[in-house]
Image (cartoon, rainbow, N blue to C red; front, side, top):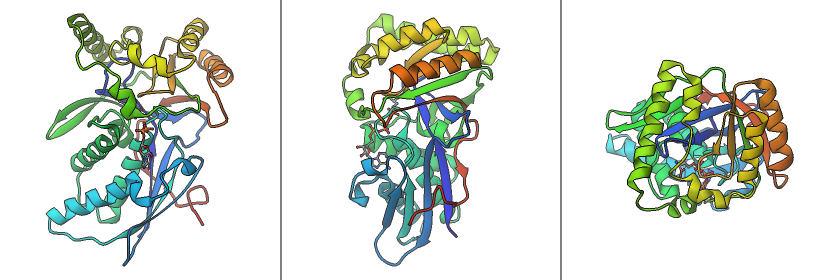
Amino acid sequence: MAVAVYAPASIGNLGVGFDILGAALKPIDGSLLGDVVEVDDSISGEFELTASGRFAHKLPDDPKQNILYDCFVGIQTLLAEQGTHVGAVKMHLHKNLPIGSGLGSSASSIVAAVAALNQFFGSPLNEEAQLRLMGDLEGQISGSIHYDNVAPCFVGGIQLMTELDHKLCSTLPSPKSWYWCSAYPGITVSTAEARSILPAHYSKADIIKHGRLLANFVHALYAGDDKLAVTMMEDVIAEPYRKVLLPGFESARQALLKLGALAVGISGSGPTLFAVCDDISVAKQCDAYLAKHYLQNEDGFSHICRIDEAGVANVEIQSETTHS
Ligand SMILES: Nc1ncnc2c1ncn2[C@@H]1O[C@H](COP(=O)(O)OP(=O)(O)O)[C@@H](O)[C@H]1O
Ligand SMILES: N[C@@H](CCOP(=O)(O)O)C(=O)O
């Protein structure tokens, strides 16, 4: 039976917690900010993939260069190791997220595809096995395995990576009062390149500071001390080196803080910027500022979001996700 799965956009790194903290996003206006993958049918020939959606034209032309093909091969290989042999399938990708945006676009495609394929084949893989495969596939794209997009995208919420064999991540409490303004300017930053410009080594002072920020952030979430948590959202690992890739980031940050945002950071490897606000009127002002000053072309967009606590979800195959 055909399956259709939605996987939300995500922020990798919450200012603090490079590669080990991530959050799934849900626009408050109810729009779908994430990819949808359909597995239509078992077929006798070669793997088939079609795509539609706002950002489909930015995908590689060759279906075998699409990460969905690797998702299919990955599942097929795992199942073969368990003695189950599955043939080719027909898939459709509704590409709603821009590529190279810092919104976990590849993670969204991977999570939706692995979850959809797993369901299509009768759910042979448990959550941990699916998530491990998702991390491996994300690593193929970005150059090294990191779960901070795939984990929240898959299970929802704010996730802290544990990376243990039997438990890859843990859900942290999400501050209920926070709005996450998220603005994608419309230009592309490659995650692999944004990772390659980071230093191979950090100073003792930076390591100590990052440990202090991360530990206090997690403590504050459990203590329900949102003010302390937001004060800890400072990036000493990536932002100092990456902000040169984001035109207008520093001036936007200053303006957003003046408007009342509590923290501003780079979403993933950028160029999307996020701003945390605990008041809807401030969030609306930040959103309007970002739409006017941070977007650079017609591909850009800005949303006010909450944390998506659900993660991956089955959706109806309907006009929005169907294709010709
Ligand atoms: N379904 C897909 N979704 C997104 N990127 C894909 C997909 N299939 C292949 N790719 C390739 O993977 C790379 C993703 O780039 P990356 O900078 O990691 O994007 P993001 O950070 O938005 O996930 C691009 O080279 C893109 O062409
Ligand atoms: N922790 C990663 C997150 C990358 O997110 P993306 O959405 O830009 O792929 C990093 O900062 O490199």
